[in-house]
Image (tube, rainbow, N blue to C red):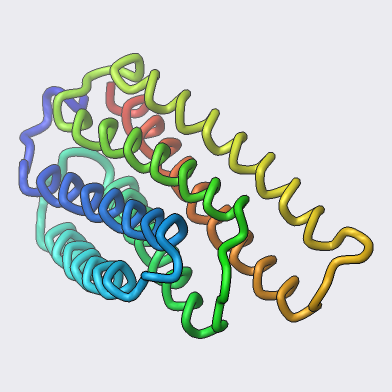
Length: 208
């Protein structure tokens, strides 16, 4: 039982720090999309956050390897750490492509997707911070449901945006290729939020 196991609170501290990094990175990406073309400061901060998230993930996994009794299943701890880190990696990958692909203007639907991403990671952060005191699934049910709804909104925006990209009469095919990748990558970042929510749900179902 989750509430009967001895708790290494350091794991929960690391989860919280990783989640906070995710929120910070998403907000910086949002700033890039809405503040273009003045993006250099945000891009550097995202790079720094990605390095910090990698360090936190390494610390958490190293602790997992050395800890005999963990707060819940090792596989679930591993999944939670990797999935949170993957969101920051996805955001960093997007940020790098602004300069790599010589983006000259931001597609409105991409900026809208960054709004969805910020909402999703902020909701996720609330759920992650509640994990250390949660005993049953209903404790996190509102956040888990909200993230699922945001993921569906993101899917709809992505579908419509990609459809417009490939509509008859669209201009430069290189720009189509660039923005198709941008949309795919931010959709994966939003999807990863739902993956984390599913992991939190599994943890509470197994241990509540």
